[in-house]
Length: 131
Image (cartoon, rainbow, N blue to C red; front, side, top):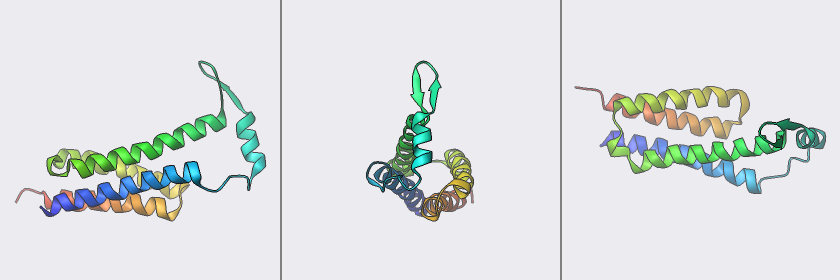
């Protein structure tokens, strides 16, 4: 039973990160602190099955990241009792990759929540070890 609680805590941390990410994306402070970079991203066009700006790619991937974190977290919360060791290994692998990437590109709140997610998964994995 303890493993389920750890899986749910990990899922809650990842879902919270996704929710906070989307809130910041849509309602956070404006990036006008570096207007020249923002303008360059808006002006830089990419021809790939139509014309898109670098800013549209940035915003799209940012939204997908938030939705992805919410999805992974929600799945862990909803299906904690059905998650076995194989699934935990897979979740830990991708959560660890997200953590390493976040150390380079994100702030402490983001990588802290990802780390909480990984630690919860790791504890659950250890608790489900065959006796």
